[in-house]
Length: 65
Image 1: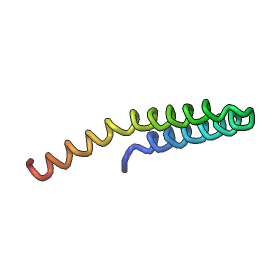
Image 2: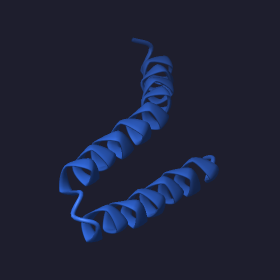
Image 3: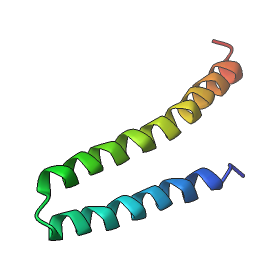
Image 4: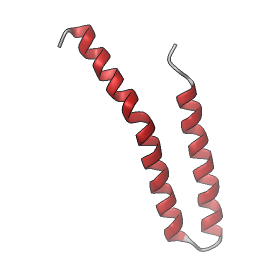
């Protein structure tokens, strides 16, 4: 089975970002909340890109491309 820790890390980042986003919206800091959400998306993408690269390498190896 695949490494489940990456799923837990992504969920943790999502929960943390959503809580901080709600706090910023309550404080009428809408622009900072949007920037925080964008930063969260970038962090998750940086976590996922190496996994996608590894997936494509394995697919290439299986099909001999």
